[in-house]
Length: 189
Length: 400
Image 1 (cartoon, rainbow over the protein chains, first blue to last red):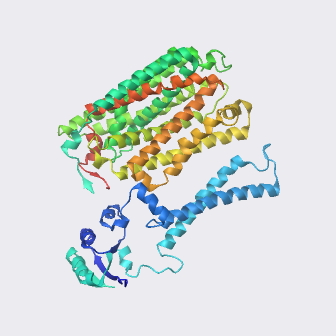
Image 2 (cartoon, rainbow over the protein chains, first blue to last red):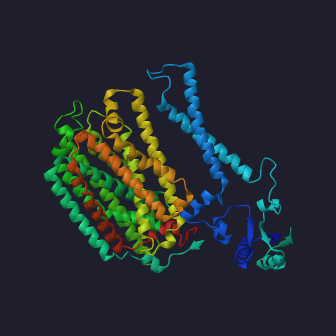
Image 3 (tube, rainbow over the protein chains, first blue to last red):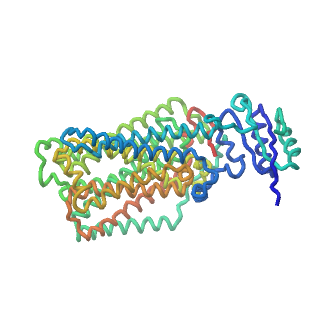
């Protein structure tokens, strides 16, 4: 069986209602996949996105995490960073104490209870840094990662955008759909 | 999405299923029987259990009402139903007060410092003063909560009658909410001192009272989550209790689980560092030696650590069912912790096997709780018009 090469149709919108209208039309049009771009993140777009973007039930999400599908990798990276910080800072506190072996307040040199504070700080610190770096990486802002090809910088400024992936025979109808919804510019990428 | 409550939604009331009412009445009777039998077979343990259940249920119910007061003070616009569920606990308050009076009448059976007076603390630890301060402060708190609920209901009725709530009316509700919050802190602290901490009169911790009322607020939010899950479809308030609302309540629980553990650790660290026998014995008895650590540590993990990990999941918080399971774990853990805080001070390590019987007196509290909450919700509208109309807004923003 030959794999169908999907083609990309891009629509640009100045009006938010037209943008929502286009997403709603795409959802019922049979287009296999599409992305939405905009200067702000709006939760209300969730129901208008393809099924993979709609929040799932808890059970489905657990399955998704176990199978590694459709879950933002940022939180996984943040968790790994946080656990690393917890272990690393606890180890650093213990190792430092073992080097100097200072007796403070009649406590043993390695006092685990107050080291919880240090480990906690490390958890927050490395967890936050890992989340920040992962966000930049997966947002394609660092390490030379290329942005989504159809992305226009104005989508972070004054425009909303839709990038629809469709089969070759759907290209014309999809462009027409976007125009009818109120797109100010439509083209095939 | 912008939605407006329809007149039907504003007027919807809870219809109490006959089976639920019967089950609650049976639970009340069984709870009373368990307590009465307990007084014959293990009287001291029975008093201990009554103190524990009083502290737990008073804590959860006052925590729920405190949330309603906090939402009012914060001018929260997303909580017209959550607030009303919090209000519904006001009918349970007289039950708490009655049990407190019963405990005060039987104080000689469970108040340890009446038999071994604590030296240098007689000015505070004497029975007449304890009775007076408990009645006055919990009575004042109950009256203030009742006024908050009453005035909100009056404002609701006026709004339903087409009358706009004046700025003065809004101010009055906010003022009584503020008074409720401050009185809650003082009264809950007194309950923590008199019904838990003073049972080991040699021990003291300035952080103990804040720890108790913060964990009560934590358990109060858990109680709101459970009731909201149970009632959302039955109240016809699905649009006011969306997954986003549950996510927000889950986040509040997450924050308070962390805060509670922080307070626990701060108290533990101070005692560990000072290493003074009059402070350490309280921790050692409950968390290091004898049989109590087998309850103490699991209670800590079940009440705080495990919910903290579970509540990391956004999907879990969006699911009312799973969030209410987590909330149930929270309340169970907090109740177990209260038992560990109270029982060793009164019975030491000599827990009677027969103390299982009076433990079932919890059924009385559960049944009374269900009866009182459902009676309130059957009588008054599910959606608080006054809360919805904050700042004169006719609509509320709900993200579905």
